[in-house]
Image (cartoon, rainbow, N blue to C red; front, side):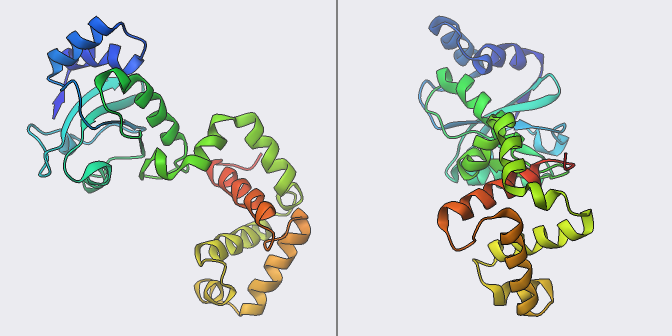
Length: 239
């Protein structure tokens, strides 16, 4: 792992994006970044644990360069044999997070774009979460956080009557929907998870459908509900 003022000064132009090719080449050479490789950028929303900043490559050959960027810590990763999954697993082992990881890019010149996308991935982490997420696994949610005004409108349009309920009543319906989705749309399995009768789950879902004027059996309307649920999860408090 490499960290410090020197590396921050070299990484800065690469992570900002838009640097002229000669500056990119000099910075990459100073850092020891190959001209071509499998790179990703990680943005952490909390200080990186010291245990995650160590000298030498990971067991799979991944190499990391850390620097501070305002209120966040940022790393450029030259991925090893285990790819992005291995890098995310390593961060999790050291308690790093919340964090977002960019898609894989092929050269130092693309690190500015990767930095921006990693920042978007970080925004998809729920409040209080310690997870490190990959943008490629959060694309629908990333679209939502990229357009906060539209996200607020979606939440109001789909969940408006639901949000008008008292918090405890709303939490029961939202929790039932979450359990039903996590159980692959199975009322039976959701009832086991929620420790209630399957008819109770069924009745809660039917009430949610009435409140939202959307059916769980219609794919396009189900998409509305899932996206609105993602917005609700991301907000620390319901407006």
